[in-house]
Image 1: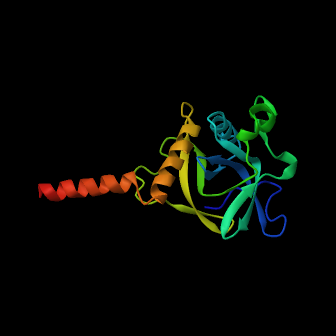
Image 2: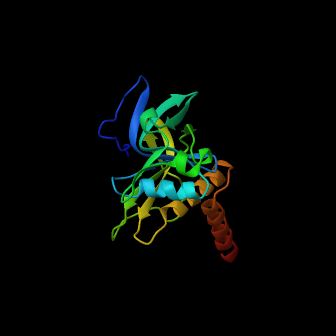
Image 3: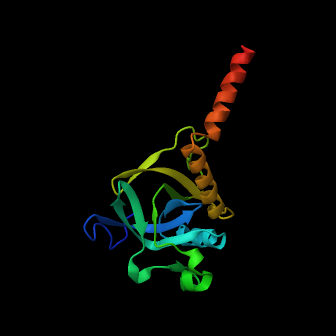
Length: 188
């Protein structure tokens, strides 16, 4: 899957790529939130900020390679600002303090928001985490269906917790799969 490009995005400064999305640091993990316009990226980021996480960039995320890892930041002109439909542009550093913002973060996980519709196929078990190419880097991705009554910030937080579990060599899906296999062997 290709990343969403901002209308004025693409390659900017040497080695820098811009994408349309939000970058939030959740539990020390950089989460790039992507999806179509109006999907809820900024509102999801705002909800995460109110829970104590940090905004790196909203709307335009500048990505560049640093020491073999993909890092993101906001363009200086819009740094610390967030657009919320119905309210407008807000300065999160001013409203929530320095603890609510970060200058940059490594992109560790992509959460792609897709509009929910009948028949939408999304991951149900999670034995293998798919990856997506972002600015030439393979980044684990979860696809989150946006439901009218759903809470995307809770799903992003859960995705981060699962990502960290997997990074530590654990996976609930694999543990359950092994348990089911052992139970099936014990019964045969």
